[in-house]
Amino acid sequence: MSQYVFGVDVGGTTVKLGFFDVEGNLLDKWEIPTRTEEEGSHILPDVAESIQKKMEEKKLSPDQVVGVGVGAPGPIDGEGVVHRAVNLGWGTFSIKGTLENILHMPVMAGNDANVAALGEMWKGGGQGSTDLIMVTLGTGVGGGIIIDGKVLTGFRGAGGEIGHIHVQDEETESCGCGNKGCLEQYASATGIARMAFKKLAETNRESILRQGKISAKTVFDAVKQKDSLAMEVAEEFGKYLGDGLSVIAGVVNPETIVIGGGVSKAGEILMDYIRPYYEKNVFHANRNVKFALATLGNDAGIYGAAKLILDMR
Amino acid sequence: MSQYVFGVDVGGTTVKLGFFDVEGNLLDKWEIPTRTEEEGSHILPDVAESIQKKMEEKKLSPDQVVGVGVGAPGPIDGEGVVHRAVNLGWGTFSIKGTLENILHMPVMAGNDANVAALGEMWKGGGQGSTDLIMVTLGTGVGGGIIIDGKVLTGFRGAGGEIGHIHVQDEETESCGCGNKGCLEQYASATGIARMAFKKLAETNRESILRQGKISAKTVFDAVKQKDSLAMEVAEEFGKYLGDGLSVIAGVVNPETIVIGGGVSKAGEILMDYIRPYYEKNVFHANRNVKFALATLGNDAGIYGAAKLILDMR
Image 1 (tube, rainbow over the protein chains, first blue to last red):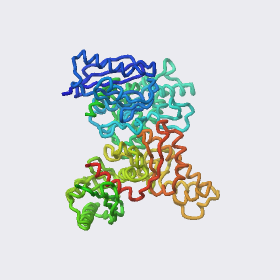
Image 2: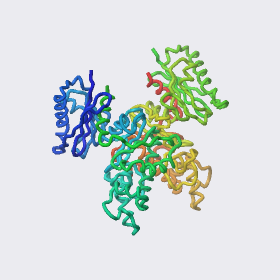
Image 3: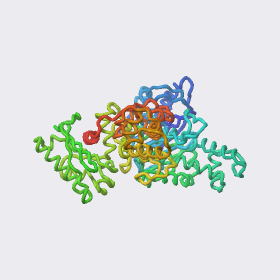
Image 4: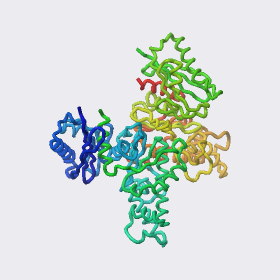
């Protein structure tokens, strides 16, 4: 009987790999570099080789392994086909088919943010809920929606791309996606630092933030010291994210909203800024949603990838 | 073998019933009054009696019928339990359980707007798509989200309640739900008339709309005659609905967006006002979504209810 499963999280610089039992205990994890040259054509063969080596090392036969789940940054549809992943140099092809051809084991693939949401549902901050929204506040804003225990993949794998919902008509700067006024421009680590810079430039008011490097971390550190300018930045952040989440909740009616990514390291104080705006305008049925912090950190992707293939059984 | 199915659409004043074959051909339809007195306790027994009478009339035995699907106005979860339906006088109880106890046939229930979306996917404007958003522009704004052919029900049956997503911070009037600035206040028939009244009161400009009754219908009739004031109202309608749909699409990545309800009778001209705003800010992956008008009219609910129970097989 198959007792084990591999979870793979393909990032722009490294690929994280995890070896789990079917209960979701992480037995081993390691990393390999992501070789994006030659249109990323080495990435999946490298992943396969690394898994085969690990199986030899552990003296595992293929029938002891349920399969391999893969998360990667890009739209990946319900058939495991990626539709362009610029960071990896990938065009459109079947991740599932490519890896299955090498490994001769079942493979499934999904968007990295969606897969991370699945991981947090399974073993992280969203445990116990099968309807949840996860928002990942990092360099950008990623999102994953879980409905009835399953990833909302969408028609072309772009479900849960909540970093690019439009939240501000007056924005003059462009988002990485080309639009103006995306949630990501206010709720990502980059966006928080950008708002702080702007506010510092607009006034001469004193602020701890004038003394050193400005980042989402230093902004929330300053908030904890009651720095009024930093608190105004946090308020703006809370308004855009709280309002945005209230709209997303209106669409999906979640039980839990999980906040992850680097910004979430600021901790519970985030909720003090997000929650009031969320509550203000949300449809009454979504008022007592649970807010939780992500707990798996950078491992959410490998956990979710493992769960993805387990759910295919 | 079971060859037939019943679809039931419970409204505030009448219950619509449909008798279908399993391919979805509507063989018979009729209505009974909705008796909301005594906390709506007669409604489901009336439905059961009407179905039993129809079965006698057609000389059908229970094993020829797959079951009964029911749509009703209120949040109904994935177990067929309604969580308060104010229009019907209903509290919280299992629609599925109640009807099964009387009919001894499989029953499933869902929110009426969600079920109508399923109907439009199956036999209406959304045919061929399994990932779609349906928005019903009537007295209010209802919504239904279909993911991979299934209704997005949500944690407590409030999935797809897109009429109450927050789209305007400056609104001073309250929506029926108690909040201010809900999509429904601008995109419903009532909302369109409200915006027209406001605009007429603010200026002395000439407009066809000064001559008679003001309704969503007369506003769009005036738009077709190039009445500039009516066109401004349509522009506002288009902005709120187009922007709102772009956000909802960002969450679910649909293949098709179906526009239904009384307002949709204005026809293709609606798209001229919605689509530019939709395209302006939507995430690129959602740019070539199909827009379609609903085609089933008031029958969408019975079609969708029939499909709901067919999918339980």
